[in-house]
Amino acid sequence: MAASFCTQNALSLSTHHHHQKPIIPRDFHVRFPTSSGSFSSLPGRLELNATTKFRVSSSSATPLMDQSPVQTTSSGLPAIVEVDLGNRSYPIYIGSGLLHQPHLLQRHVQGKKVLVVTNTTIAPLYLDKTISALTDGKPNVTVESVILPDGEKYKNMETLMKVFDKAIETRMDRRCTFVALGGGVIGDMCGYAAASYLRGVNFVQIPTTVMAQVDSSVGGKTGINHPLGKNMIGAFYQPQCVLIDTDTLNTLPDRELASGLAEVIKYGLIRDAEFFEWQEKNMPALLARDPSAFAYAIKRSCENKAEVVSQDEKESGLRATLNLGHTFGHAIETGFGYGQWLHGEAVAAGTVMAVDMSYRLGWIEDSLVKRVDRILKQAKLPTAPPETMTVEMFKSVMAVDKKVADGLLRLILLKGPLGNCVFTGDYDRKALDETLHAFCKS
Image (cartoon, rainbow, N blue to C red):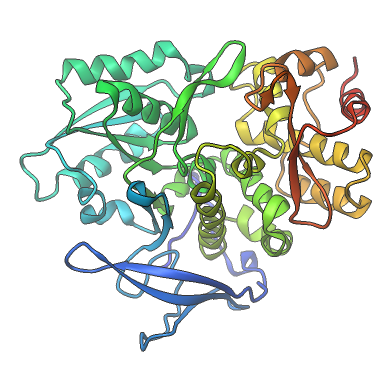
């Protein structure tokens, strides 16, 4: 079943939005839920062909399917990407209409009490659907909800307390489940509340923005901001599952959509050159909300994130590479004011700065600098920080970055051909100064 992506003002998708797509073979495992609730796994191969359809070819005698396994398979089942963390492993379900498949959510809810954490924008759109999915055929399950104000500027201790207030008032017990219904801010806050409430209760992620679907909902980073630095208070705490209903993107504003693409671009730059090349060809399709292109971008991003998190959950090395552009970007968010720029907008400008610095160090070719600039402009993302940012503002915020170790600021920089990066404190300080001065007026 093909989802049609459109904005709230009913953007129509006519044939001229469908761009030719290259064939990208990619080995993967598709896992389908069986009737017993366990999973059967079949090795497969994903090909994106020029008719914008997906094919899954399996090594067993399963029939070929024309529609994307990412949207839903022929039997309406989601595609599943597994985050492999031993006994804390969990599935990421990806597909169209998943909020209308109650069994997916219900298999991850153990107790009889659920607290849905959402915001004033998302509640009128998806709260009733989510409550229906949680309670369908389950008369003994009680669902409470807490509706928070929307925006990065509310990702703080004061707003977090509203979640605890509601949990305690409604007698949520240790067997309860918290559900994060919203974008990155809601996911981070609900996850941190779940990590802390009664010293830890189960939680589920239902991300509703591109940013949350391709990045922040996966991997268990939870937390809140502090006036002096972004995400300075938090915990690594993994969800029971991530449920990505791609239909929720129908109501996402264009600016939020573009912001999420900054993280998609990041995966290509740091570890997946083939994916970056696909994005260069398919950015118009993504901006036009082509469902097939979007489904592919979400799934491939989740595969990249899941692979990294499985290898380095607590960010001792490899996982830090997912923060390309984030050190400069977080400084923009903190210095300029939380919520003035969206996270992805700040990360885009930060990525350009990290790429500029990589080039000054002689680590990458000039052609890559140009390609990064071109794709970010194509995605309608900023390629320089706000004019009010000064060198001193960058330096003071970056001094308290989480990647500082023993007083040394470690950065994620590109090195070598496309798809390669390093996480290092071993760089010429002069290059950092030159980059900051190049992008700041003072």
